[in-house]
Image (tube, rainbow, N blue to C red; front, side, top):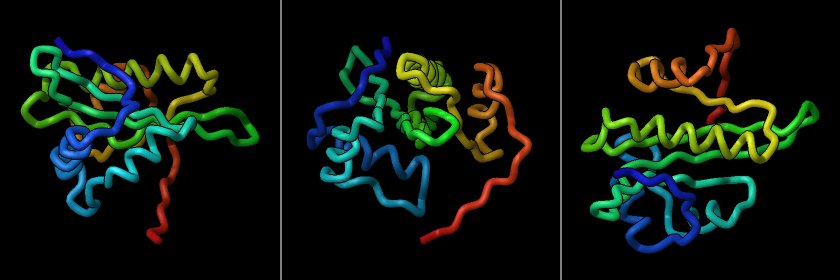
Length: 144
């Protein structure tokens, strides 16, 4: 059984988990350090969700939910959704995303945004099924 919880305590095992999962999402960004994870876990505007296999206690997925206030209201953004390649297809992404949506509602966010690469076909189908709508907008990024 899979349980979704908020990650509060950053241990060496948690760091090792991110060392294992981040390369499954991005080959160009290194996994976060223990200090970076600790800063995120302590930040009231960031929620680190983890999906844990209750039989083994092993983390098999993660999702980051970030809140930010702008003049038009509180917004929430889902980032870095990763389900371990050994656990994909079991509904873990849906459980993580629903936990994030529920938390955003509780906090009073007006909307939850996310982006997903077109190549992530299963993830894109999931987001549409959960009610996310593709926006007619241009997305820009300036690497610093």
